[in-house]
Image 1 (cartoon, one colour):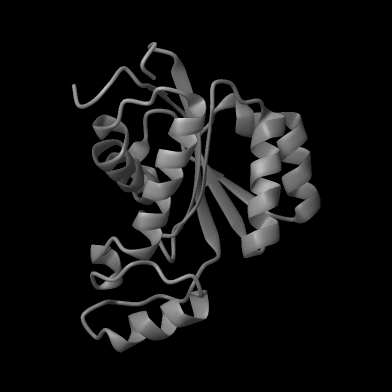
Image 2: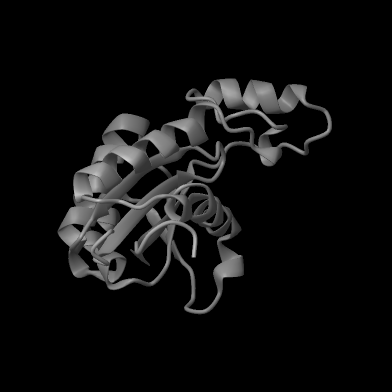
Length: 178
C-alpha cells in the first residue's frame, strides 16, 4: 500500500489444474473469514478430498477443524519451515509476487482488489503454465484431463481433487519493485 499498510492474502489453488480459485485480500482476516472463502470456493468448484495448508492459526482453529471434519475433508498440513512439501503454492506465490505484487503501488484496498483479481484472471485464462504443456488452466477439470492425456510428453496422474491453500501470506506493499 502507498501508506505502507500490510495486506493479507488468502490464496486457494487447485494443485491438479493449477487454477487460482480465489485470492482474498484484506487488512485483517480471521478464521471465520477464511472459512467463508473456503465455503464459497466449495460451492463454486465442488468439495476436494483434501486441503493442504500451512500451520497458520487461521487453519488450525477449532471452528475450521470441526467444519472440515463434518465435511469429511482430510487436511494435509505443511510442517513449519518445509515449503518444499507444497511446491505448487510456493511456485504460485513466487509468480504472484513477481508478476503482480512487486510491480504495483496500491493506493487503496479497493484498487488492490481490482488489480489482484485482474492478475488472477490473466493467470487462469491467458498465462501459459509449463506443467500444463504451456497452456493456461482450463476451467473444466474434465477438459484438463483430456488435454493433458493428449500431450504425450507429460506423465499424467488421475485428478486428485486436492487443493493447496496457503493461509494468510503477509505482504507489505510499499511500492513498485524493491
